Image 1 (cartoon, rainbow, N blue to C red):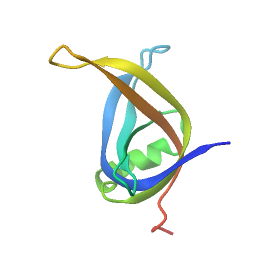
Image 2 (cartoon, helix red, strand yellow):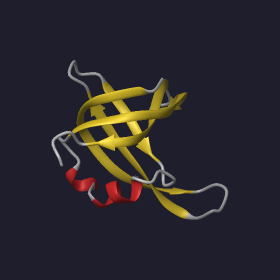
Image 3 (cartoon, rainbow, N blue to C red):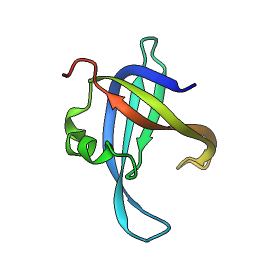
Image 4 (cartoon, rainbow, N blue to C red):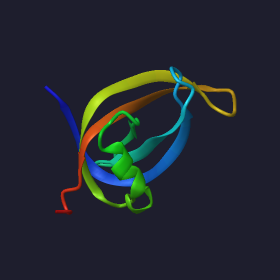
Length: 103
């Protein structure tokens, strides 16, 4: 059984990353999805996803777009904040991203 998230993209950005196995530079697509009650889901799409390259091309136009996606996996961890505090953070690895209002 897969987890599906539906909502609106609140922000999207491309983040340069270094692939640990090869040392190559690539881009991670990071975007936040807000559902109908205001929950925010921080999502990521890595370069090995077949949709990632196409979505990176339109990263500047993703904001405010309705979206539905499948959660492939997730990571929960403690994150060190700039002020030194530790906060719990979860990131959802997205796949099968669709935009219901687009053909």
